[in-house]
Image 1 (cartoon, rainbow, N blue to C red):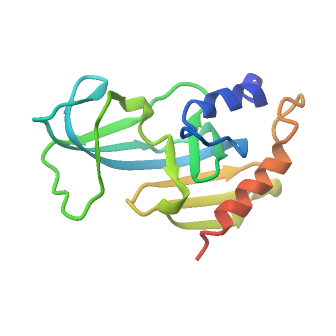
Image 2 (tube, rainbow, N blue to C red):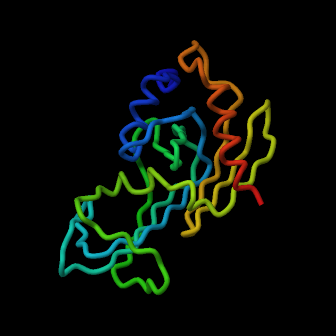
Length: 185
């Protein structure tokens, strides 16, 4: 468990989802209490583990959920919120190949998209609301809701774990709280 409190490991894990041309400004270990991610993809076909481009393919709505407490890395870039699991990826997936997508933002599939990679990076501009409350022992409870209906219920711990593996935790946590605080209604 203590191996997750490693800033270098965190930067590598988040770095794989940072958009081209951007850099990770801040990243921390956090705890997810609930995750519900929804995306609609077009011009694709669904296989056992991914979506593949298909000119004659249809539209697939993907709902990726997890209703348990688990460790994540949470980061921000110049324009994005980046989230990835610290250990393994185990979600409940629902697919709708016949979804009613009127008015929904449809992402065209131009290259293979593995299900595990869905919902790792979100434009900050797509945040609809962020609620923050004080938690136990200096933590911050944070609920982020995206414009497409996706949401995350997170806990941002005051400390970055034992052993000093995350020396910038306090500084990065404050940067993330400040950034997300700009979306509080």
